[in-house]
Length: 398
Image 1 (cartoon, one colour):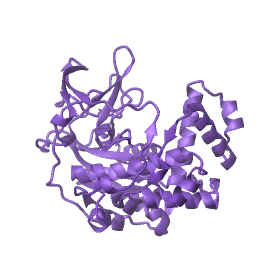
Image 2 (cartoon, rainbow, N blue to C red; image 1 turned 90 degrees about the vertical axis):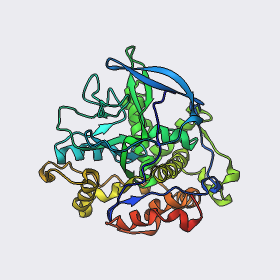
Image 3 (cartoon, rainbow, N blue to C red; image 1 turned 180 degrees about the vertical axis):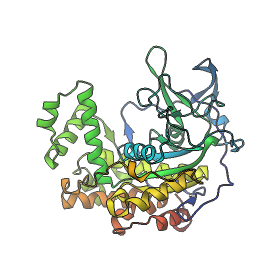
Image 4 (spheres, helix red, strand yellow; image 1 turned 135 degrees about the vertical axis):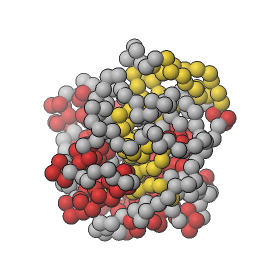
């Protein structure tokens, strides 16, 4: 793994009624969470600084990960665009949020992921003053002073790799092979934490992975439709297929789970994705605590018609801080609020999922996810934003 410089958290950030200033959690290791072992993930102990050769990034000297902290240096970058992360577990509504933001503002967003995701070849960097930087999603559009920047972070095996994954860029080298580099953490001035209901996230990931296998030629479109149609039965078949195909695709010590949770969780389709989902949000909230930057919680479900305008306006006000131009509401993208798949799961499976979320989520993550189990029709997420910052103190760590 190749990495760039890192830095210490900025502590001077301010908040609004829809934001939160994150604080360092205590007692993280005391929270019982499953050790998730995903095939193909390897923890490396060394990192590499980078230097620039023309338009290419090349590795330089190697250093030990223990030699640097998360964030250091000044966060005063007034002459350059500020990075506002859009942190999301995959298939939470990231693409819609990015595309809709660009349509409504008429300005480009940014991303940690290069070709083929960006519209420029070679990709255009957001911060040309930096050795490593996110890329503009579509550089032909006007560029904002604060830019929403897509990141899915990375492995949930350990916190340090997760945090580094949040600021990892991916780009193909001259031979077409992907390479990864880390940009300086001090470039991140704020973050949007995008959240979707865990049941819908599981099914949406099935749709995404199925399309990926079709595109790779592993399955034909006819096979996909015949074997793994869009139904509860199709979901169960897909999850069995993936588990059989990858053998030890995911393991976790059941001793770390409540007996009733462990007993029923294996009956939930793609339960591995659920464990990944919970641990991802655990680490996302921890990352924001460590960074101490303003953050905004965005629920995918709040794009529904009854709360659409208010949800988008809150997001816009947070990301752009002092908006230069009003939103062009005539350009908004249609939102499909019918993508709810709770009926793909039995009542017993839904209960098992709820028990797992309650038991395995850290206090900070639970303050965000509890909405799906304790709060009905909550159109305004300001209350959740306000309470997350105090979750760890109230619950003894996180």
